[in-house]
Image 1 (cartoon, protein in one colour):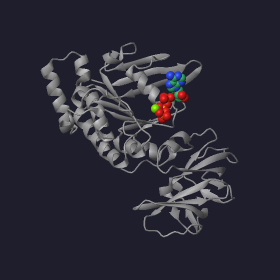
Image 2 (tube, rainbow, N blue to C red):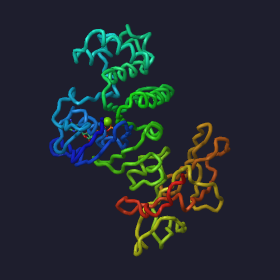
Image 3 (cartoon, rainbow, N blue to C red):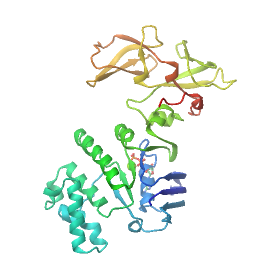
Length: 363
Ligand SMILES: Nc1ncnc2c1ncn2[C@@H]1O[C@H](COP(=O)(O)OP(=O)(O)OP(=O)(O)O)[C@@H](O)[C@H]1O
Ligand SMILES: [Mg+2]
């Protein structure tokens, strides 16, 4: 069993706290993706679990075993890095075999395991090559093969695909989904890529400023971000965020004075308070009488859909999703409205207002 449980885990570098005391339980066989802005502590958390950093406080358990003070090699886990970290002077086969050699496995077992892993990652024809004679995607497959050859209970992956081109990323993303099913290992995966996070994760952990901001299924976090940090971390292009004033229960005032109905349960006495309204580009509806208007300053055509960036006068832009075949001229004035049920509201501390009041997800 490879449940990973961390309790009160923290990390300080000198006077700087990089990870505040954190509790997190990852279930056996779960695929957990960690997202969050650069510098928020994702790699540090992974390196602590791997044993590459010593925690300032707290404990790490893998399965039934407390591994807080165990050596990295003695934790029954493997880690894949963004930089492939292959041994340049060893062949692909020798690179993959390396962890087994270190573990002093018999020659015959090593040969069998390397062949099996190479087969599953389609590396068979490359086994005698050196890493420099491989493409980026092939190198990353070798580093993954090396990580899984010992059949670790836990696989840690720190932005494993970020050096690959778009097409390879898609293929490798499918590869990870398949690997997760066939290995039945617990996987903890750090990425900046929205698609990877949304499609691979059983649960996503959003980190911000050295803390876990929210943990939930991808759709949970997409529909019910508990804070501005989570609203910013999930979705691409990101959620539009606009300053508003709370008018009364169920209504806010935009900076141009227009009033907008919202479905959030606004606490009594909040009228007059500043808040942030959030609406995703894909939830804005073209509406000549809508409150979100502005000239198109940038228009991005993605093929199946497109994004219009509207100048709002106040410096910020509102981004709205449109069908791919919508013709738009730069400078054209477009207006949109937001269904009350799709609007998010955050208080001055960045906490979602009335999240509990949002309707449950449809089945
Ligand atoms: N050895 C170290 N000494 C001092 N500070 C460190 C050390 N390692 C990391 N940090 C700091 O800890 C913070 C978190 O770093 P970490 O690498 O965990 O971020 P991250 O979330 O992985 O970011 P990215 O998305 O850019 O990879 C950063 O501010 C970083 O500068
Ligand atoms: Mg990192």
